Length: 309
Image (cartoon, rainbow, N blue to C red; front, side):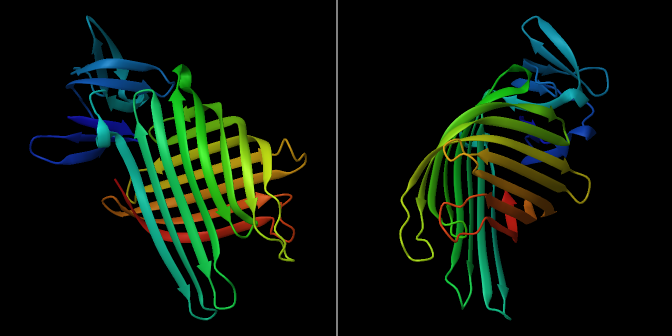
């Protein structure tokens, strides 16, 4: 029973075993009576049963009386269309704690990443939270919750929508709520990397913290554009590594000249099966903070342990 093929790993289950993962490069022959959607690196999709081929590393997809022979190295995604419910959910959870006795600094961070994928759509939930505390200063909080939707079209094109809530004490934001959408394209996808670019518009409402004098700042409503890039590189030779980079540039169309930016880079190293260690570098930038005296940059490094499922 094929569960999925993505990010260079084929997941399947047999009568004698639980779910097993194997590197796609190591699969010589494959057949299945399931209805499988097969996606190639160039975005083409085929739906049918997988018939055994006499040739090495060739996958035959049969649909009705017709079939197509595909080079296994061109295949990057397989999805059984019968699969429903929680079997379609992939995710990971991370948590970390750091403490420095010399200056009594402690930091806690938490992350949750969930994705529900169908043949042509995906729904995602991402949560990132970080709290830093010292004896001399009040706790500084950085939280982000993001709900997103993507609809995939032929030739690796897609449209998307999202709803995001953010708190960042360093930038003077009690709560920024953003809602928007756009479109983009997966420029490259293989069993070792994936590069996605998107652009669009969003509406943002900022509930601001008090300024240096203690006066409350009025809330702000703005229209913003965005351009983003997500680049994942993964390696399955020992040790297994996963490097994820995201960059988003957000020019403000209401406050001309104001530009925000978000940059994250994470390195994930698997320790044992599904248990990994992660280090993350993040930077949030605002060229013209809405609160007087707020920092333009909020950056940091966090480490954590995580589990993928």
